[in-house]
Length: 161
Image (cartoon, rainbow, N blue to C red):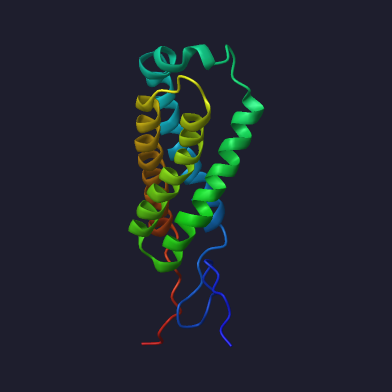
């Protein structure tokens, strides 16, 4: 009987052990890259895209509790569905592709629901958000995986030669 495989590789004598701190490092790197890119996007696109297109729907203030909860949960999703498989395979490109797909699907959930249910929700916001979600999620996941893999190389046991 086969068992489901975990994305966290087991340490064995043949493969060596990955440092225990690689998962917190991967999360921190994913968060750092995602938050930095998203801050640039939101600060630059607020006045050029969101305010003109959906300003009548925007709140005057940010609910930082809701925003913080979103980022914690979303970055956890990127770690589980994009970064962890890349760390297990040793291929950072896996995180890039899976992160982009995760971002596209997650942002599509929000924007296409708004498109379907809200009066005057513009297609330009939906299309910009879908592209942004794929880009920022793929970039954050791919870069975090690449840096984590480079930092946390597996320790190989001495060969005795």
